[in-house]
Length: 268
Image (tube, rainbow, N blue to C red; front, side):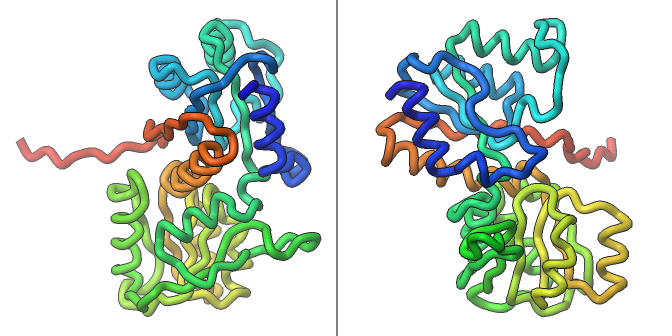
């Protein structure tokens, strides 16, 4: 398949017009008439991911986060983003991004997150007024109720790379059955989770004051995971789609681009 053909296929699956106005999605770089046999999928386009793609012989990289979300005045190889762009061009690797258009798609980022947690009867947390079947976040039901503490441990066990970084806010003994989720930074949907009357809301990048005020106002319990862990499951869905519809080989990157690390206890 040609790069241009793969771009058209992905834009049909994740239409650019579904993205937020501030977002930058779609075809970023590459030769449209180049051939693609292998695609690497990743949350971020960072140097380690590009190295992985080059080693694997991937001619196309699909990422969730845009490399060029904010305007730049230069892609000189002396800059962080410029080095990535130059490396990809030299290696003959194209780049495509689906960000907020992947968030609201169905199936999309939060569908994969909900499925990883085993949620059932899944529907949007904030439906798109023009197409209520899709939208931001998802609400679902656990097969069996758990305590908040148990649900936090469940999330740590199920989500990739999450075991060392799950935080919960609320009564650890509280009953959790209905759950809202949103892949990525989700504090914009705290009020939606409250209105939905769910028992817990799982997302990433929750901040101190919004979380504190949310709980003080009677909002549902919170489970905070890393940004990467909440979005990585979706890549498997996109990879399956590309194998079925484009006939290309796929590699899903497990390069954890979360900047946070766990400090091991050292009593020596």
